[in-house]
Length: 57
Image (cartoon, rainbow, N blue to C red; front, top):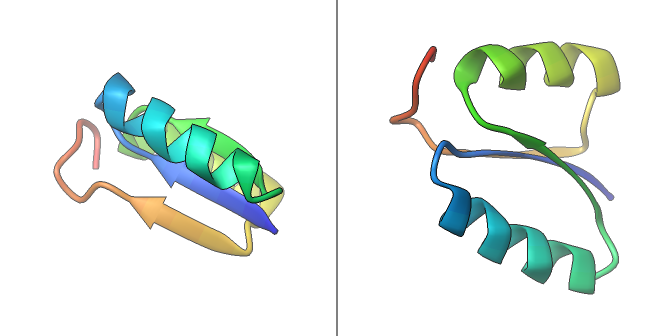
């Protein structure tokens, strides 16, 4: 499964990334809302995990 993970806190992204990759998923990361929108349009992920309180959202 292709997952887009968007969070401005590196520790949270790292933990989620390790967990999702261990499950065999392909994970793309975004650090702010602008990057998240760009990636979502480009790769069309199956699932998006979003932090709603991050920069440029």
